[in-house]
Image (cartoon, rainbow over all chains, first blue to last red; front, side, top):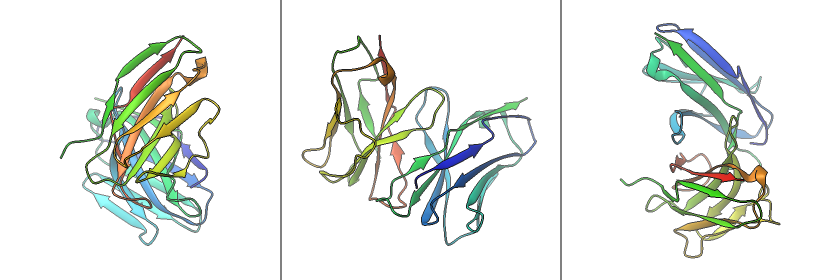
Amino acid sequence: GENVEQHPSTLSVQEGDSAVIKCTYSDSASNYFPWYKQELGKRPQLIIDIRSNVGEKKDQRIAVTLNKTAKHFSLHITETQPEDSAVYFCGDAGGTSYGKLTFGQGTILTVHP
Amino acid sequence: EAGVAQSPRYKIIEKRQSVAFWCNPISGHATLYWYQQILGQGPKLLIQFQNNGVVDDSQLPKDRFSAERLKGVDSTLKIQPAKLEDSAVYLCASSLGPRQETQYFGPGTRLLVL
């Protein structure tokens, strides 16, 4: 991947609501899209990923959707909990680079009890 | 399974000094990455190794940064001389191979340049 734009930069929701974060990429050859969660002062951890041959993937309360035509993918968190509060980064890889992973700028998610 | 190890965890130096960071990837992982994460931003890839060879260092400021992975396992990243703008967290990550493989991150080294 070469360039990834992530929105919004901050997101505040009430516990139990849904949260959606969107990323747009530019390299049409990108084929791998991970999402990482980073709690304050801790390392980024993979929460879900999707490859270009799949349009949607779910894991309990977390889902990712991919629209290859529009070159965007989104993270959906349902029934949010306070422990979901963190910074979320999207990434894209593959394409013309040697698997180089490019990260978005991050979204600070705050879930209010 | 042990995770990616990094040391030191914190480092404070003055500008123009040199500093080195060490990373030990997950056993068996052929690909190793060094990222720079400036406060409020996503990690930026500095260099990617496949075993002991460099496959991408396009964003490494080569006039001051260097990295090596001589035996294809541990890696060191060096900055000499450091500048104020080098203040950041330096994250090491590893994966089984390149291309669409999950990257596992270490705890990072937080560098402050005064």
